[in-house]
Length: 345
Image 1 (spheres, one colour):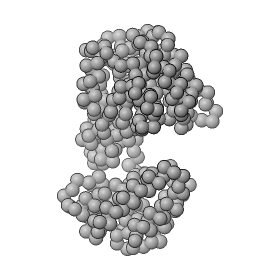
Image 2 (cartoon, rainbow, N blue to C red):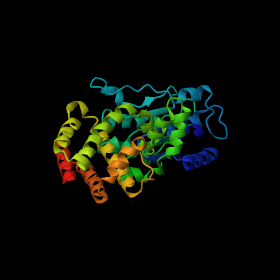
Image 3 (cartoon, rainbow, N blue to C red):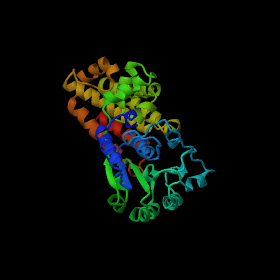
């Protein structure tokens, strides 16, 4: 049932109406940031159709069909299991399937498998449902293979494309789907959900909600211990920039951020740097500001009092420029050192 999904009440209301009227489109494009709930919504829609005892159009969550609907066994991609990703992965219910990327690409064979499967009549439900997760990972060949299915949809099959980057999809694909845009989830809703799980202390739940950027998936998966370690590194950078003016610390931190063991954490460091600078900027404007890193408020107020707000605003622009430059094959170590030296003036 949609009530168990956090956020996006308006979308829930629209889907409930479509389910009651049995007017669900054959092709839907779900657009929104990663972890915002696109896949749970898609699977809940599918579950409503396969459910044997629907309640006002929604899944009962108790019948044998509901209990099987969202149980998938999808392996982690390795060099040895590529062939498994050349097909649709079905849940324990034979009318619900997912196409997912092998590493960074959705394979054309998987799309061809979806095309074939979508033309089969449902085995035990009123319709068949197929989810293409991270649809932006289709290359042109895979996308063109999908077009044929979207142009001539089976009346008993529904296809949900999920993406955080709709503009990377072919315009012809977008034009053949009805788009549903998912908004970031309110931080208070995320915090309450985390508290409801009984796995988070109130302070941790509040921080995770602020750090999530409206993504329930990010809030649930973020390791606060590792986050605080990285943030401590970033605080040394800002202390050096604002208080001690020690460039050696900046260069040493740049090396640490780009060390091989931290290669998967680089973006985390940049996100934290941006978040903390933004907090300092807000506190420079008004010490009563609501900030993300509230547990460090006293320390950040001290830094704010010694900062130039124009410099802080310029640093935020520099970070955005750095992000844009990473769309090309830029050396991160050189770029980081250059960023820190520009910030140091």
